[in-house]
Length: 271
Length: 357
Image (cartoon, rainbow over all chains, first blue to last red; front, side, top):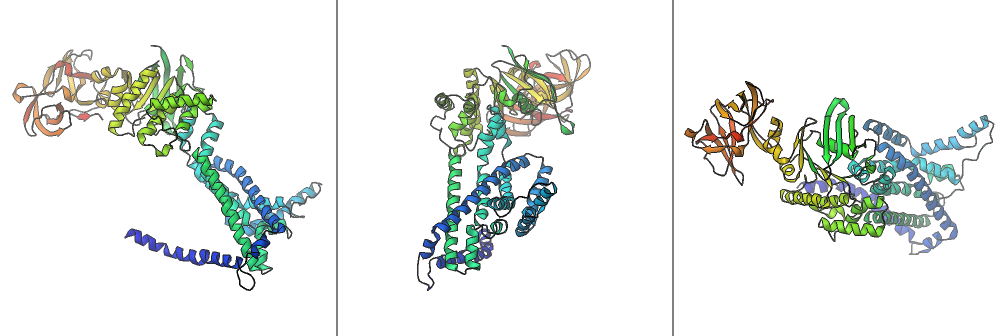
């Protein structure tokens, strides 16, 4: 009886998913495989594998990977540090991690624009000190900076959740068996936190590889990632079929990278 | 036997002024099986954690072979611990758990393999090396924990209620196995438990703790037969503890009668606590005895019956006997001079009957 009621409670979500997730996916698929006259074709995909588009895809994956790596390197120590604090201070620091997310993501990126631009905060300061101005904007560094800034909380939170639950007696057991602090970390704490690393990597890599806001605002008009390419196909060029094919490829890229990450994480757990 | 581990006036005060250990003096001989026995919160686990190095005493000193090791971190102490909940590493399989300490010592992998295999066969887990920890039963996990500690050949093994999570039958088996291993390998064991039977079965020496102090330390037989105070008598085995009065040496009065006893040295006309073990009381016809009462209840305990006998003065006596007297019948209680243990008057009130775990 209870089970049935719970099942009924899930109906709205199932309906939602069917309408707004599954149906659009089929539409995208259908578009991706159709020619202008509506007949079946793989030409859209063939076009996507032209060198110019491959370069865009490669750049997207590369930048997303760099962004994910930086988030991991910054986020792990932060999460480790927060998880080891007393309860009160933990709450305060987690709050600071989350607070930027209260503001719209677009606005936060615009804020970076004003900091980095030619007459922005940094260059004004440099000028004041009599130093030459720097070209901080419209390069891949600025794009990665924007992505790291926006996605870092998605790395810290899952890592914190896992690290906070680390069993203190396992740490003591490792010390008891002769492990120094570094030994405890590399032999126990780090391997046990791999599930957190995995979800953090997933939650950062996915939005990073699909983003078009950072590349648009901080990378400039000529800085094209796969996200921008898709956006252009739908909103500027009105080639929905090619845009759909690119979307399908992007989904495959995500699927494959997540599969690889899952495998790596699983293998770590087996040994 | 030589003095091996020395705790000298060790105190531990946690914040908010909770005194967990109060100037504990304790020494442990080489190859000794010493048990710290007491109720939860008595300070036994804290004592163990201080020896292991996980806690630092507020004051006092801890010495190994005459040298203070207070400033040695846990990983540099010649001890290994078996934790209450085993604390096995869930990300490693059985073999890698056991090999953990040896790998840290950077021992040759071939040698590690031999040692791990030997240790696993010693704890009856040969062939389990590749199993995941989560795929093992509680008893098997317990054995892995023992193997993981012993493979490092520690000079001292610290055990924190290691059998607490096992069922009775397995616990009994493991008690014997642990004792056997301790004798075989010649390692000093410091064992923490709240189970008095376990302590009596396994130990060379028992230190009974309560309220952060050692109440009594000695051989199991001495602790059981000659408890030093009412707490020990109550905690070890089951006891009838009642208030009494000693007019002079070798004579004690309680429950309105006078009895011969074998104790002296309490001074003349002094109040005392009288402890009588339930199994030392013999049931006789009421008219033959000075202590008598009505049987309140009879409980079958397996080897014996436990009867609660109400005396006319309100005292309730716990009696263990292989023969049962039916509830409601009038019985006499006979105690010999050897069965009466006298101790300094404590806090327990008149006629209270209590049983230890």
